[in-house]
Length: 318
Length: 297
Image (cartoon, rainbow over all chains, first blue to last red; front, top):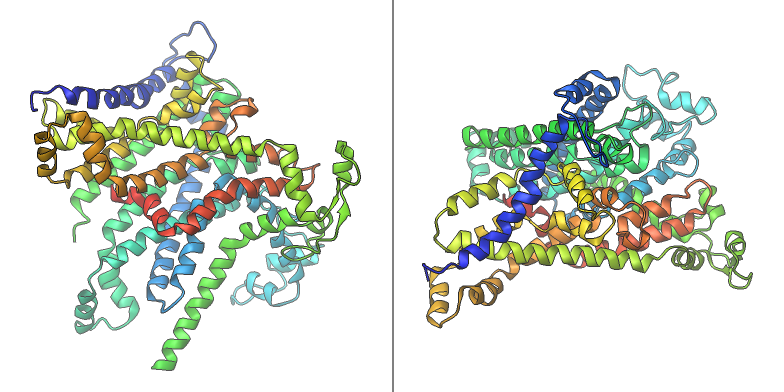
């Protein structure tokens, strides 16, 4: 058989598709980004770095970088830490862990677009249960807890909650306000992502040998925190690296919630890269600037992945 | 000691229950709105399911139905009217067509390639494998724009092909299957060759059956990803409702958010979202396995 030519027919379709669908577009994006080509034009001119120059100097694109960075820097750490906490809590439960696991995993499964609309209504200023919950809590325990009146440095007459209660129930219009929109979108991102991380951490936790904890206890690490520092955290190193990378790559690609909820607004505070590519290249037919954003975007992702591979080889071997 | 442990357990449950409530909020809102009448939604009353009083729905009458047809309970009305207003079965069918085509082509392309990479020796094998590893780094959503330009040049925007073509190659599938085939003993393949089976027969009659568990996980991974995908269909389907996948349908339902009734809108969204969630709850373990597959990289 070894002189059979079957392998050519086995690998040819895959190779051809890889070249056409994955590799060629990289070069195409790179090429277009140096031109003034717009879809439908018959001709184009080379314009050198003009598109990149726009990207780093025009206000819109600077805001785009900011919004993307804010989103990634907020969502990744919080969803990773929440995933880890949830996994550890579930792992130490005597009963009921499976139910919580199902519930926390639901957002990963459910169509994000549908859930984004459900959140839109949940957070709606007049129809949503969040703001009505807040409004009904004026003067009560909710005001005390959520207004942070229990913190010594918060003046209970001045807290955001009390102010909103006093001001005719003026609670935030979460997705419509400049100062809350990006954080609300981040919140939905975290809500969606942490269950995925939790499941990966649960798998990581089960692979830690029990003897390590006994050994740590003999060495004097009695408290849960000391055991965590000494055993759990280092043993989860590879899982953490993987979880952080994959969450970062997914987070970079946020689009659904932005497109349906904010359209990049208010005043570009949620103008993330994937949405910018879509808006510029598809809706406004500015193909070349879209291509430049694409190149920067792919660059970010490749750097991240190479960094991960590098760290894997160098560091995370326990 | 005992009592202390119970208190500890209680605290953990308290924290997890608060978390679970926050996680479930939008699901609650969605289901609740799909069951209640417009007045109940606007006054945030009626709890989860509302009072369910039989009534005549004015929007329905305005649309041209007789008063008799329009008199029913809110939950009946919401779901009935949702189906009247939009071709929901069509969207669901498109979802099925697109996700299944993608999965089948992915397997047709990936399985033979994975077999060749794992079990056949030929010149250039290492090169092909490193190509696969390189392509693993490329996020397809990231290169959506050049792909769109190519499809537009080929005149394929607004077709099923546009929805399916970019996903026909799953380098992750090749990688996964190759890792799996590496564990299949060579003797099995040699025995098949002795029986006079050709290489094609070996791929589909010997390797495919051994790979069923891995394929199942991959199927879930692929189907869930493409059923829920919104970005790519949004790029390449511009207006043709006949090609709408479920997420595009959802977007359309939301269109009239300011003027329309919310009940039927949420009913459509629930209808489109529910199949996957039900499948997940039934085959939870397999789903979690499939979706976290990427964890094996």
